[in-house]
Image (cartoon, rainbow, N blue to C red; front, top):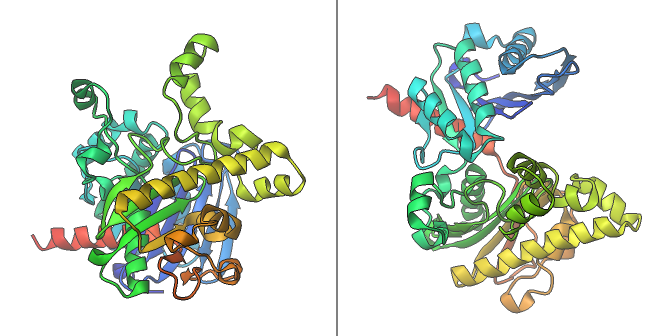
Amino acid sequence: MSGADDLVLVINSGSSSIKYQLLDPESSFVAASGMVDRIGEKNAGIEHHIEGTTVERHVPLADHTAGLRLVFETFAETGHDLASQGVHAVGHRVVHGGEVFYRPTLIDDSVVEAISNLSSLAPLHNPANVAGIESARKLLPGVPQVAVFDTAFFHGLPDAAKTYAIDAKVAAAQGIRKYGFHGTSHEYVSGRVAQLLERDPADLNQIVFHLGNGASASAIRGGHPVDTTMGLTPLEGLVMGTRSGDLDPGIVPHLMRSAHLDIDQVDELLNRNSGLKGLSGVNDFRELQGLIDEGDAAAKLAYDVYIHRLRRYLGAYLIGLGGVDAITFTAGVGENSPQVRADALAELSRFGITVDPALNNAKDRAARHISVPGAEVAVLVVPTNEELAIARAAHEVVVAAAQL
């Protein structure tokens, strides 16, 4: 294990879970990783991975402080006491930075308050992020902590891309604009693509598909995003595991008037009971594929709607960029579903886009090309590494602060 002074603890705090990694931001060495799940339930627990071994414990956890305390206890039991040996910094994933935060930020009380005040823009995410931050500050009071925002990469979107066509005064007063999400992933992956192609990012037009339970796409010109699918919230854009993605905004008042749903019920419907789950009953792609193989018509329709939306944004971004040099798939579905990749890019050879079936279906976890050799447009699969990107950002902020 690397020296403690070289390591950054990365925390991704969800509504009922805490994902974490302890890693060296310079060498990319992961000393340990794990997840605390079902916080607030009796069957909560931890799965902790360190030096090739896995430790599991199941205990009731009342809140995020109890969850993080369990993380610290497990580290100590496996030979790395975070509280006594210390770490260089803690990096926190925060989903929504609004107009306030557009770069990694050293956390103090005022930053925590500002993140909390943005919860109306990300009610499923920011409160959980704040809970993780507050817990980590209690448990590691002397360690610098840094917030890294999902929205930061997209802060500088062109005005035409980030502006919604509603009353400008209302939009300004309520902070309504396209913010974009998964920015840490899109930034990391697009940078890796430039390295793999041995090209200057400034010379590349890229489309990146981050396809997990949450899904988004971005159009990147010269290393800078010019459009992305998620908007004011992570609900807009592609069809996702449980989120609807794009829909006619008139559906909301229609449901309130005709189905007598209140606003919280509509929010629950669109965020937690729509997307693949709403159409097929499942949100896991492996389960969806199993249903399709059994001849389930609803599952097949869900898949077709998913692909249709991917291709619609692919076409929009091809035109918006004026041509593309690389198309990249990342995250759980993007990295592991050759069928999704093949169907998303089917019959596009006239645009210089052709997937090699053998390369696409290869059982390879590494970053790789899947386009036919010599294709005009490079098609790649690049595993995302948001934890490494967060660790590097936190490290840079802490080093810069120490030099002031």
